[in-house]
Image 1 (cartoon, rainbow, N blue to C red):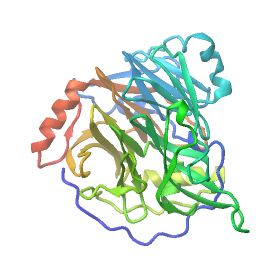
Image 2 (image 1 turned 120 degrees about the horizontal axis):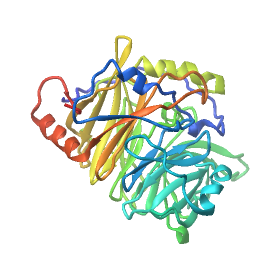
Image 3 (image 1 turned 180 degrees about the horizontal axis):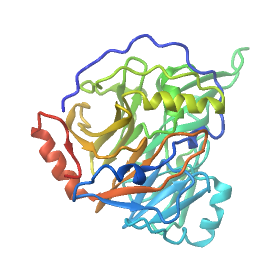
Length: 388
């Protein structure tokens, strides 16, 4: 499938500068396995029901053969087999500390270390056995400003690229100044306080902030290059190269829909109306990388259900290298790539803030993913089913 370029219409004012502590942990409910009973999966995909349902999750990795999900309601890391059976919780004293640490998102660095966000602007580093490797606070930037809250992020080499709220201290008689935008900082514990704010600065009323507050993974890293989805002038894919102070557009990226005008998102009770509008629109809801490749998950309303697609993008300029269809009627989902298998974790409609259940997933081999995209390169019709 080849994306056609569209230009966004004018956007109204967006939400006020209120950073609610729960917002990075927002998500949507799950009824994926039940909904998929009427949607036959191809032989390549294996459905599974979680034996112990996470309270809510929007983030996971594969650690060896196990799918590890961050359960932000029960404040823990939850490992599962690919058949959905719950493994024992993370071992040792660290496993008992998650409730106090409040894990919200997890990612895997290229060197194999696990990165877990545990505070609004703080991270814990672990090895594959969940042994503690250090803690990083991303609060102080090189220009003297302070990162107050990180909404979305991804590792890029030894750095993290993140979308955050930023406070600039009083200067020259002026009061504190607040802005939003993309920051880049080192995950090495001996390089703290040397992060940079990447131009351009964005207002706390900026439309991109509203999307990044929803908790979708809209940032990815390929090697040392960070990729960020922004929404100022249509859906844009921006690149952050190590050492650069400005974001650079991925010139060949385009998306086949305008940026939807979401309702005001100021108070917690606004969440339901925002997510209802998300379900009625075509938009990207995930960006991730695997083995040097960049992928984007996106949704499209189709009658009373959702059509789900996964596109492979060129890390060089963002152009589409092919699109496949994800056979799911779930209201919301996210993809977790792994060395042997990939998982599609399915979720249902948002009933309110953290009013949700997560029941199941389906998995397929990485080899089948590669084969599907090899066929997609020459496909000129409707995207092929990734499970067929």
